Length: 174
Ligand SMILES: CC(C)(COP(=O)(O)OP(=O)(O)OC[C@H]1O[C@@H](n2cnc3c(N)ncnc32)[C@H](O)[C@@H]1OP(=O)(O)O)[C@@H](O)C(=O)NCCC(=O)NCCS
Image (cartoon, rainbow, N blue to C red; front, top):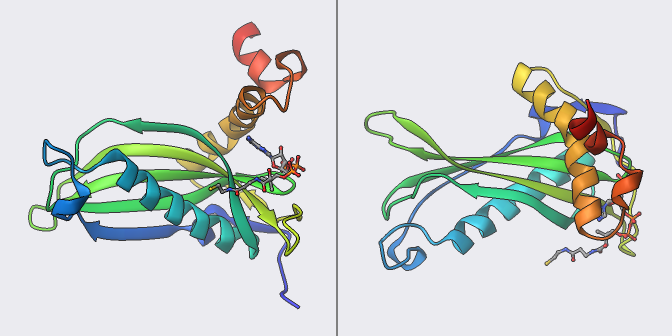
């Protein structure tokens, strides 16, 4: 039997994946192919969700991905994933991507992605997970906005009616 605490810090799920961009992972402009980066982000997010929930997890939704800066062939890519908020069985994972120059130490924030994972048992049935305790200002900011994003994701996937949202409605009315 695995023992599980009632709540955990965001940092306990921190997952960092560092890789070099190889030629077969680039597009015709010799920049990293978007799908390749998405696959790395999904893997890091899955590990992070599994660390938090101590369960098998599945991707329920990719809520947002932005590509702000191209990543060139040979670049060192760092994907950092952390659980930003946990609900009953689902959790939001925030992925930050950095282009890291190991020589100059310059770090450029190139991308971010927000994922929803659900903890499941062997029958693929959702199971309960620990809560999240945000500590830093950024963690608190992401924690506070996560419910709004969950509602938006549920509306876009047809699981919730817009009129039933609480947090999302507040964004437009307050
Ligand atoms: C994700 C999955 C387990 C949800 O199962 P379900 O029977 O619909 O379960 P529920 O309706 O109880 O939802 C479980 C949780 O996920 C959340 N959820 C489900 N779909 C969601 C979505 N699109 N966006 C945000 N949250 C979502 C629900 O709100 C609920 O959260 P909570 O318990 O924390 O409040 C199921 O849909 C599934 O197995 N999907 C396929 C996953 C997969 O194969 N992913 C890899 C793709 S290659």
